Length: 194
Image (cartoon, rainbow, N blue to C red; front, side):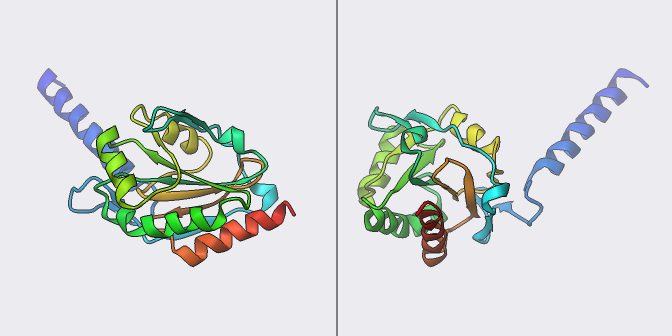
């Protein structure tokens, strides 16, 4: 095989491998209109206590420059939401996440965002627009998503992950999190430690 044929064969192999990797959840998720987010249907997966993986080691600096570490919240339930400012599904679910954070404040529930796309200006503008009361980690390095991926697949933005009181993954929602379903999962995780 000559050099040109080998180069073409290698290029086709790479294209094939990249195609096989896209949409990695096997549920038909796809990049919507090349807008940079991956859509999903809000499908939720939950794990029984004995089957949970973790604890999740997630930490980083928020957009205000403060260090955040979910390990500080062991003993409480943590809701982690991946998002970015120009993601339409992220904007659609933001009011429900804000309500959840406000309604569960002081009840042993913490909400934290994870944003690997926006700079501080766009992220903080989003947080002001939706009156977001919880911090978001600046995940421009991808370390936060990598920490989650090591425990639970994150195949869409937005994705919401609920960590139990031990920091283990109790549930994951791909796509927009339905408010009542998410509250039900959070309530179940809170009840486990009662």
